[in-house]
Length: 277
Image (tube, rainbow, N blue to C red; front, side, top):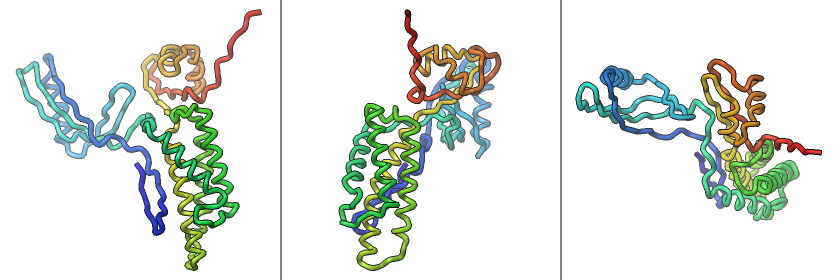
């Protein structure tokens, strides 16, 4: 979600607010078998205990939230139809939404806008070095990141994303000093307008690159098979050592219940290729 701020003179800034869970999750189904009534009433009690939070898990996804509505229609004592709605409060794993398909095009446009306004903005105000330097670094990082990832935002390197955030933060700090200087002269207002204009591009770049952060997945497994997990999540069973190293394990098939972090595939070094003499 973005907060959009418009200023006199056509300047705009964007403030990324972060990733929010779905507004509502609804589904329907059947309770069946001799315990159908018992399981139905367990959910019904959770619904009627207003304000009580619970956890909904599905596959690798998991949310904390509250049951908004729950309706049951008994067919007989062993079959009960139901409809349920759940409102998530927060995501309790680290899976994030991928960038939208148009995000890459928007990032290109923002980079072009930023590049054309360094070191001089479209209003003719020369940017001070303390502002133009981090903006130039942000531009270079963005262009390089797109080239290295083949223009696929979900494949951006974590280091490029971190550098982009650092450069953008430095630019906003330097720009704020100019915007908040209190200079109400014609040149002072022009300078403030120019800074807001150029920082709007920086805000777009930072927002998109942050939303494209590599997915970090946390998975809970009983007696996990790291060979299988490496094949599933990293596309190569021999990568089990990467999962083991990240989680402080040495056994590819540990016994017990483990919550394991899965490394981002694009951040891993290539597997060395062996050669025969």
